[in-house]
Length: 233
Image (cartoon, rainbow, N blue to C red; front, side, top):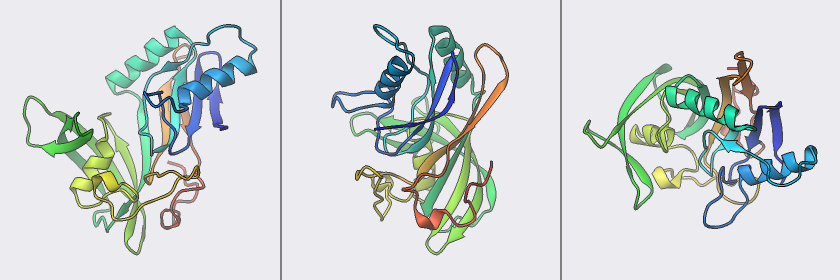
């Protein structure tokens, strides 16, 4: 599998993850973004021995888009700190089932993860829950679906999938959270219509802002292309 490199220098590697590919390896032994990046760097720069690849954030397996990796331990520490402190700007696109009537706004919820079932749900505020906040605006509407731009200011597990499903707008293809339709990824597996469109971070050594955009993938639903084709954020 060949991934597109969106940005690369001595400290950072940014790739466009296809839906269906793991970000990090798991017990299945399936290929992951980290595996691919390590092999890519080893071959490109003829590096002997082990190659350092620092994973500083993740995307769910059925989600596509921008993934930032660190090429040095110093960069990994500094980039991870940015994610913890909430200074990385994340922009997602999603195609949801139903009609989101508001044109823009913000949603705030409290989420709790059931680790046994690997699902997340909204709850009333309590000591076990974590706050989740996301700004949204409508990019386009088609019969039966709405295309949204989402700007989360928190990074909770399954956050966007749950916040949308709770409001009656599950992401197309997200059967786990109530979608009626399935959606196929390019590799023949399944995907959800959630795409990490843009990531803006501070370079770990130069300290300048780096903004990286991932193009709309080929397996993006046709209904989600109306009014959004390669629109900048």
